[in-house]
Image (cartoon, rainbow, N blue to C red; front, side, top):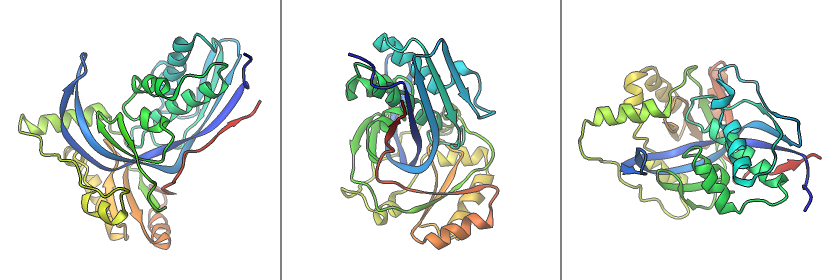
Length: 297
């Protein structure tokens, strides 16, 4: 069977955690991990990932100055993992145009990894099954399976990789507050564990209707990582409060931070919130579907 193309381009969409409860810990055989009850939601903000196969050698071009060494880039690691799993595409070129903040809790690196896997699987003469692709993605990061699953809204349990697809929520304007510094997931979960100091876990699954509603989320939109992160970065408390004062119906930190988001039912209020702080705020929206892949050649 011949290749189905040589170049694929995709918008690697960011995600929000509309709620995040930490319910306990589990051991996967190599390390202890926290278990979660979280609601994932895609937004329109995205990186652009272009993959070309059939190249001489392997290259990655990422325009983010803070992206770090190539070997640590999740998009690069995703390509290597796919090649190892399929014994195909020994040569490739990957270009990533970054818009999702690095270390912002929006799954930017995971989105790039998922986009690379989807692109390569589309171009491959013998694609992996959806299940195999998600398993491969799960080895790269806890958010990658959601970003591969093909839906815009999902409940995540276990370490976040046990996914229940949900009907999409009605579209809402979202204002992102970008504080200008990153928080690593490792640090955030480490702070949570240190502050808990052996006390029992109190995070319990939110009792959301199916499908979820924005009204229900207003009552349950809690992120258990806010307290430890806000303690170390108190400026985020003021940023969240400012988002509430601007009219957000939900204002929270997403994931392990550092991004604070506000969900607005009123588009005009969201636009005014961005205009009030144009240097640190970005306007986007929730979406109901995953961006398609464009096969160019």
